[in-house]
Image 1: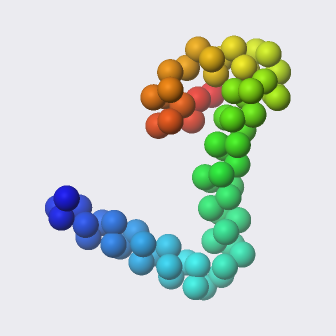
Image 2 (image 1 turned 120 degrees about the vertical axis):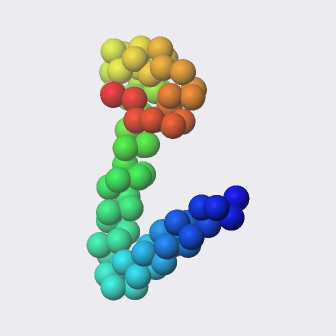
Image 3 (image 1 turned 60 degrees about the vertical axis):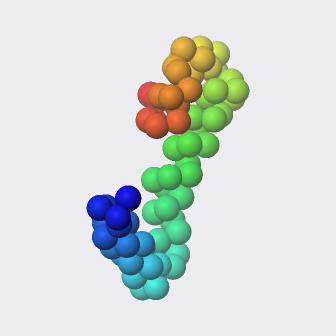
Length: 71
């Protein structure tokens, strides 16, 4: 666990520095690359994007939906 602790620490440090420099830009990028794609996956899964996308999402495993962006 300690083997990769420096990488995690540096990631948190970079996030903190980016947030400190420009809060709005950091939050927009966070939403654009993290939250919006997951919301689209959820919308496709419940059928808001059409029956074809719902069928695709139903065919994907829970593992794939959790760890990857299903397209």
